[in-house]
Length: 462
Ligand code: NAI
Image (cartoon, rainbow, N blue to C red; front, side, top):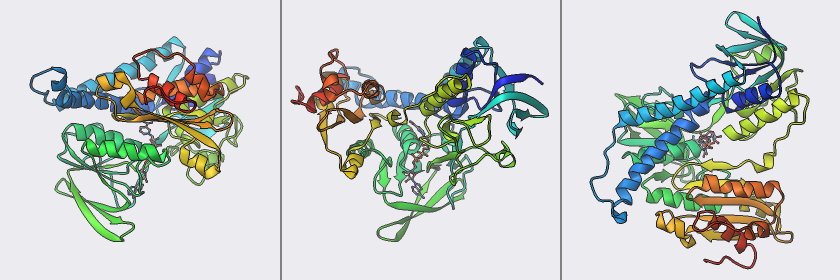
């Protein structure tokens, strides 16, 4: 069979980006993918389809709640679920075909099928053995299971099933107030479902700045989402297409139950490495099942590398992409680098939530001397005009040096706004550097500048 400089296993954002960069750097490259289409979880059953449904359901929300006030009169649109699904599929197809085009353009071979690694330097797909000087595992992740809750992808669904429900449920229970639970819960809430989110902890979105957590939960409640906090789900029983979810309220130690037409299990994801044969060739895994790698993404077996959700770190497409590019540089004999301290996180609800760097809670815990510059979107003219003034920008900076340590945004286009702070932090900027940069008026970005000004002599519109 053909022989390559590098074979990449998996064509998600980690794998396909690694493949393109390897090819651009002159390496003979193949990528193995067993799905019918390229793009992995993100393009097929994750980031992209969920964004299509978030967009469509947000448009409906705008029509129902804000059109009349703008003088746009008439009946609110009704939901044609089949057409919405078709729109979602078109969005997926456009993206996955785009990757296929990029593979052809960069002369990357797509080896179709599921791969295993019989030994270093060899990749088996079906009956064929392909040779490669180096192998990159970019096999991604899968939904984690929860004891007592069996996913049938009909009544009890993972994020994959939640993207293609037969119909919009009347009552939906979401287990887990993390990113997936809140994005999918928002979609079905806006489409008319009564959504109850059951969360084990006392706050939503673990690890996020606690001030943002509180504001975010308040806004979601206002949008109609119900929350049961501090509740550990024990079981889920399905009878005649109806589910009963039983949970224990941790503090009171009481038990309760709730019925639903659809239950979404969104309690995290785990690395997907089954079937690769890693145990036979001695690739080391952590206790959590992640492939262990060194700083150069090489595993303990020479010539076998791993990136993305299958290794340590946040399970984010853009983290995998960065590792894919850096790992390709390493294989081409160059230096590869990922700044793990500056990986933004975004939740694509309305409003969006975005963060980068340290949370205020972490700075407090460290005992660090810091200052806070905060600015509400209520003081931003553009946000007010667009019915998007709920939320704020919060910049955390070192008290003495003014260097930016973190930024937390809840508000319109937060996922885009965060990047000017990422760039500033990458260059080691002080809050004053942002504050002195001219920002066009009227834009949402002015709120970022105002938060930076608030780290110094004060915001103008506060
Ligand atoms: P998550 O880790 O974000 O949240 C899971 C939640 O479930 C936690 O709040 C946890 O406390 C709760 N939980 C765990 N066991 C429970 C129980 N028995 N009863 C009640 N609650 C329980 O996981 P999620 O949302 O499933 O996302 C998985 C991964 O996918 C994450 O790493 C996330 O970053 C990534 N992702 C990122 C997106 C984005 O960047 N916009 C979108 C979708 C997924």
